[in-house]
Image 1 (cartoon, rainbow, N blue to C red):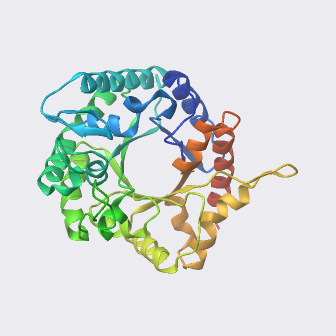
Image 2 (cartoon, one colour):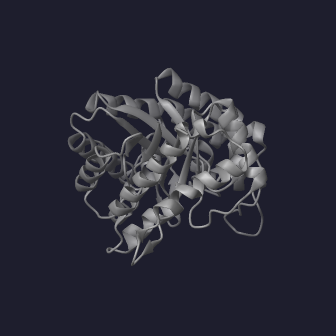
Length: 345
């Protein structure tokens, strides 16, 4: 069944109200389409409620604090860490209140170890990515801490089918060795594909042991497809943002992953809206359907696909009050209905 996943980012600054809207939308789906709710982030609430802060709050036996350039590892726990943990707990409680009795799929997003190490700094120094020992420790800490967070959520929402989306949108840049050091005068050495997989496999296995499905977000780089599949993620998510261009070699990688049994999720731009015709639902569906058919994938595999709104489009909803993110979700459902119809042919 074709699936629509709620956006990971939501406008406003009221977590409870946002989650109520998400669950309300998830209850209404066309025939042949399922909707997954998300544990959403509200950029308007500040850095302590963002994806980085939530991910850091999942770490076991790690201390962190806010520095001049964002979050960094610390020698001991401080007020920033306590405030981050309290914000995460409050958000989980808001999620549970809004989703009381909810018995559908629910997706929680945290940074994977490679991206988390890239956007977090060492106690005294550069990005944590520059210290392979620190990266390995972060991965092990996530493998222990994320199941703990999921167990807490399962106690709060015992009927929900929870999955975890590990956001590794920087994996392509990490693999290419193009990320600058803190000084900006040099580049962090490239990390090979096997090394990326070696770190991800135990983490994903820990999720499987906790009976939690895993998806891996790889941003807009096709280079992340192979590591995601080899690390045994059940679903690969790509973000086409505002520039869904054709890439034959990239779609060949997607085809191999799908034929191997990996589900595929596509984050699409906001629908183009015409004053006469309204949202371009067919255009949204074609972002997936046209390359799918061009590369020769069987239509029946479309039943294992999902579409969602890209983070960049959802962030626009936070910046522009008049932007109707719920309207975009409704358009996504209509596009998913078209995809489901094509899958049944």
